[in-house]
Length: 273
Ligand SMILES: NC(=O)c1ccc[n+]([C@@H]2O[C@H](COP(=O)([O-])OP(=O)(O)OC[C@H]3O[C@@H](n4cnc5c(N)ncnc54)[C@H](O)[C@@H]3O)[C@@H](O)[C@H]2O)c1
Image (tube, rainbow, N blue to C red):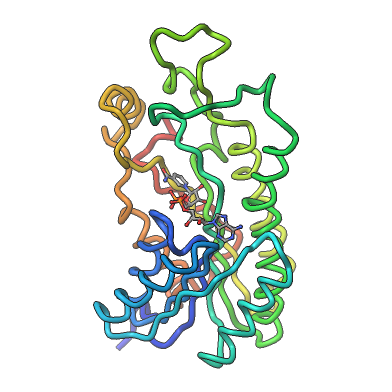
């Protein structure tokens, strides 16, 4: 029978930030398609707990592995542990990032004028340097075996600038209003640059590299924020954590065999409005 092949049977997928809100959903999507998710996170206990429950729910092997993606030796140890445990690595999802919840109450936020070099370095270390190190170390192993998939998880704020009016709080002076930090846009725009570079670099080594651009996810924000955010989205709501699973499985699978360097936007139409 001819037709697209969306199966991930037996494919081993490393998901950085695997214990986070969306990392767990990415892992579930891989497992539901027959793949073997490896949840790599600095929060090792949570990663192991989620991996165990995914393995039980989907009947596939899964692992939680402690990893700090800002350190090359930690990423190398992650790769070594995946290869010794499963004997292969097929997919890398660069998902970990510092993701400050500006819209939450009590968020102590730095405006651009006060944004410290320490915060800048910390955000770039996880979001960009971490993605680079994972691509260099795990992607090189894939290029050597002439097969692999890398997915960089970006955001609508890699394509459009944050509308800071969304985050305004009443009762605060203009220069005290919270803003989405500059690093978020820089990291997320940079990730698609990494995608394009790697996609061409490894195009003849069987490694496909793509970006998924996510719209903002509803996750307990105040009602006033949700209303303002939804009004800016053609489909009239923020994303659900499961909204990205179809795009992830597609890009990981052989159904996307000719797709590389693409930016797949899953945002309810927000960035076209
Ligand atoms: N939640 C959203 O609304 C949204 C929207 C668009 C894009 N995104 C992107 O999706 C991805 C996941 O977001 P999320 O909402 O699940 O965030 P999250 O904060 O829930 O998860 C991030 C995970 O990364 C881990 N992490 C942080 N530093 C690390 C390091 N040095 N090494 C390894 N792991 C580390 C954290 O422990 C955490 O488990 C991020 O790249 C984020 O920018 C999220």
